[in-house]
Length: 144
Image (cartoon, rainbow, N blue to C red; front, side):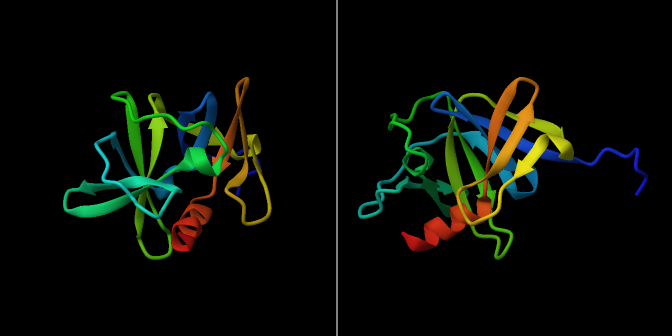
């Protein structure tokens, strides 16, 4: 590789409880407006389920996982549909309003070791964004 070549990664960036988070675009299947949810009794860490073109999709309660206060679903919320790299399983994360794509130079990404939900941090201009581990999300679903 040419030493002058900048390696970049694309991320889906979203807001949740006044904080910013990112998912690698390679794990994002689609982004769509939030829809009504069916309850998930006995699964407090799931917000519920919804029907996506005949596929029942669990909505992970990311607020619970990140110790943010709970909020009701609003018309400005989105679902980010993520897929597992292992088996193509899908789940959704509810976000608040603004969802955008950003291309980030690899030098702006600080990855962490371990199996936690936060896989690192991204420095984007004056903003620090927490990188979500999609693998950890799916391990969480398997444990519920």
